[in-house]
Length: 226
Image (cartoon, helix red, strand yellow):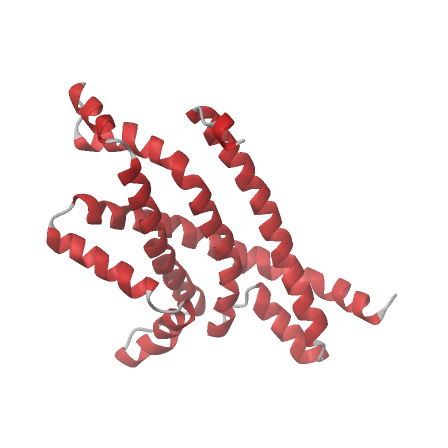
């Protein structure tokens, strides 16, 4: 067996274990919390009084205008200077959640705004409250439109979690870095890490296609998207 193939075979379990224990949980938790934050931010910008909307706009402006890596460094390395100490994984979770929240809020805000006003009027005409109209009429319609961009955000997040290695989270990419430090084979190990990310992204892309078709079928838009 060639040396490079043997090295990849020996290191693959460590990479997959790091992905299973850290990369996947970090991705899922960050995306879930980020969606909740994004929904709250979008609603704040669309429906809340101006002071709340201004705070939401400021948050989105700051997060979208600064690099994710810098945000992680501020949380993990910067906050201890003011007495806030965080372990690596919680720091990464907070950083990715804030980032996803800002970007997903723009998507959610756009898709909510795209729902015709007549849908609001129809909901109110049958006695629904604002909350009922939002949860039963507006959000289900907006969800169909939001699936593709939010799915792309999720796939990008899987790859972005590699930045957590910079703040010592022992995820997939840092596992590769540690093996490189002992084998001195950076090209082979980094290519292998890239292939693992590629496989994950490819699987998620196929799931995204199926999810889009499912939503399109329920929304009566399958022919339009074909």
